[in-house]
Image (cartoon, rainbow, N blue to C red; front, side):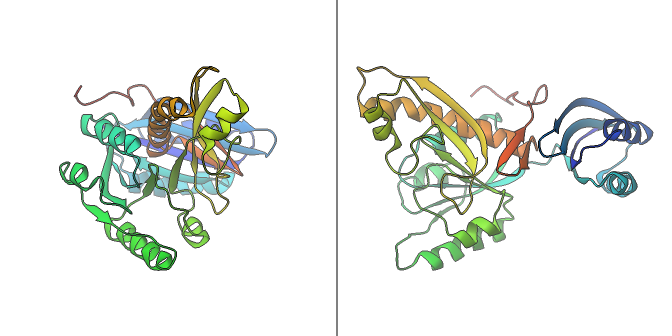
Length: 294
């Protein structure tokens, strides 16, 4: 049986869940997982439904048949084939912990994505990437050539058909134009528990403030640096006896796991933009299972 997901955002009103459940039942589909959120502050309703087609209905048939239901309730909706892996580009500079973590999770099937390219402004990880049979693009970035470099990056995005760009400690600020063009399609990992300690050297800032928790934040990239809608966060405890270098080392593990969880949520269509915030639904049963252990 084919497994699909339906994502819905619409104005909150009575009967939305009933309309969706009735439609799927009439189309011979069995719901296997469902999550919903009614935002009383904004009046927006969000829903994600996983289901199996037991009578052979395909995406085109479902999308066509659902149009009347969606129109009546003012829905912004999409059907997704859960067997299709999202095409992803990873961008990295000279800190490789997030890249290596993502490559491992991808290799064992824990992160079911199709990595179509890795882009870097340095050559440090060319061999690692090529050894995984993934195309590697070194695109140098300077103050003088930044517009040309971004045009080349966008060419790679368009040539590969990438649906998501992951900044795995890519240490270059993207232009407003690129952020707007790729809105909701670029995920960044920030080595700080935002909104605290923005900008450069957040671990040094945290050390100087004597914090007892440091963390990492994964968010969508917008034109406002470090202000994009937050997808995932986590922390690790530190003490007065640890140095700024300890903070950096401890932070690496948090950064890697937070970024991986954010990507997992995005590729499974669990993240909904809600103004400058996000709605992130829990993972469906079985979605974290790996194809192999190593």
